[in-house]
Image (tube, rainbow, N blue to C red; front, side, top):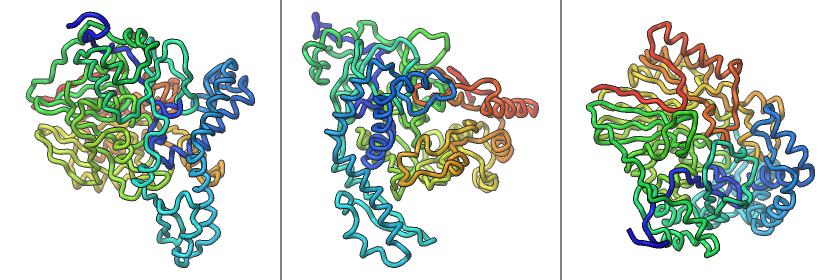
Length: 532
């Protein structure tokens, strides 16, 4: 160790690191250029305009449990000036993205008015200039005209705009809902003006387990001289507790909350849908960043929703991830951007796509992608997959938020893969309407009745039990479905014992137990050992 500000220290485990884009929390649709542009013009700008016009309406709405997750900024009226400044800066700096969003509306009107089944070739010169060369015009087999994005080229034009990471000391789980509230500068907050793919961020987060010179990290992160004393408070001389790898003959799995599960054999580790809590005093027992191995061979992502692709967690783990596996998306569309390209843009270079019924051989078994139906509002979303993991003879099915809207699918799959030991399933059967997540991407507002019927639903009791029955499951685990407090800021869900997801999952668990099937709803921290 050296003395003074240059001494080697550890990044504290209670330091929160929020990735931001133009001061908005960077969830999965704010990185692809097309979806970012639509969220800018159809989510962020309208929310800021509404808050400036009537801050008291927003202040009242965020106090109403029925309005949780709505388009309301979670600040009092004292921040009108700051939001106005942010709105003005956004309009000044993101004129091209605003124009890109308008171009998608113009292109839709062009196709609706001119594409009647004849060749689309004459329409290419009429495509808005900002989109020319970035889209291919297509028909489906019902002669409905649409377009596909040439997404890699769009990234070359727009990548990395407005990205930063906001560092702060974590004192609890409460944070404003990230889809509707931008992050404003304030006491205790330190912005690091770096793009997400910066190697300096890897150096910073490696310091959680390997000490580094604080002054050198401040240089790498571009910390201003006036902020360096504050930056130094994010570090400690106290080393983290050593991680003890699993050394048994079978498999150990640990539940970290929501849909995040770590599986380990003596030779390999896999982490599903990483969403982690920080380490600080809490009444809820939980695993945190400190409970991860020094190296994670595979990170597996089931689908492209903000509670399963959390860049706040992923960027902090990037330096220790071997490979990220994501669902294959061969034809990116406005509603379904390529997750592989999104991750590449955020600095993850070893990303592998997996197709349905495609298998990857592992050192202790195999991994297969299975179809994932539902939970996407009947949109043609391809970026979703369930995973069948066969480790040391144990078959585990991670179905995430799959909704069993077609039971015959699982009957067919059972013939292919046989019975399974354990099923992991989300049962958010009262999902939000499609406009809540996908609304900014629509070129025309969806009819309210249609919007209410096409929801982000997971399986209910009947649908979940049909999966259990199809595979003759010996164990069934239901995820916590956003009820852990550290998930509030990305899901904004608060259930009561009478809420349908609780009622239906309770009924499934009780039915399973009555039939001798081990079953529980996971919450907080859980560990199970599967013998060899």
